[in-house]
Image (cartoon, rainbow, N blue to C red):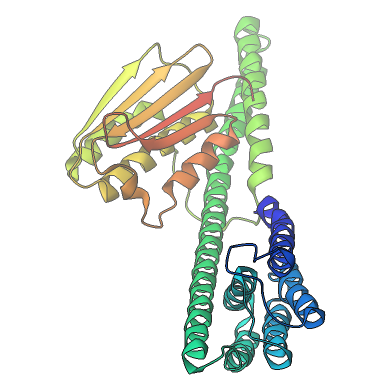
Length: 373
């Protein structure tokens, strides 16, 4: 957007200079530049009037009302002092100025400008028929500019609303992630305490068992530290004292599949590769991604079947949820499922792709690394 806006002054300057050059050629070219014959009238008036009607167009977006008044005022002055404005450059300048007034002026200023421009247009033309023709063209240009302005404002409002919804969705998802990661860290710390107490009691009687217990403490500590770092990055406010429940993982996907079948969504589950021992945060997020994707399918895909595929790699796990429903059209409902899944994947340095499948339907594909935090 910024790059496009930065080019607009240059485009307007080129337009103004091109129309100014055309106006000069129409004035001085023998027999007329476009074959309509030379423009009659006092050159001392025609020349500055032509420049006054074309050069200000370089500022038509920044100052649409002053530009429109200058262009139409110059045309009316030329009509009064020498002859009616003629030539292609003059006609184009009047239409561009009227369009710019409708497209870029703020509503109160635009109303004043429209009245002034239409009043000045009444002075143009050698007879009533010419004047009526000018009024029709100017009115059409003003109307076209107004329609374009309204469409631009509507699109900008929709874009702002979409950005606000996405930000709200990300904030909600981060708050929920923070609560879930809190549970993961609490579980890890509790495990460390139990193992430390057991290791201390075994230290004198069974050193090997005690050593294994302390090694487990170190592993749990590293995992808890990684999850804690993520949680602190997400947490924005203190969580309320809400009841805590054990968080699910990929080992519970079969239960999720059966639950979806029970509510009317036919789902198949495919596991590929040797299952890995996933960090608790990754395991939870993987389950939530599949759960959210199936929920979206159930809500928005219409009558559909779904296939959930879990592929375990050496250092990663891939998740794919594919359905044969309505495809991307099912996502145009204002929901935030995709935004939430994307935030979960980003949290662990993974990737997410969501869109129409090659054979139709909608496909969500996520890849989560399973390395050290």
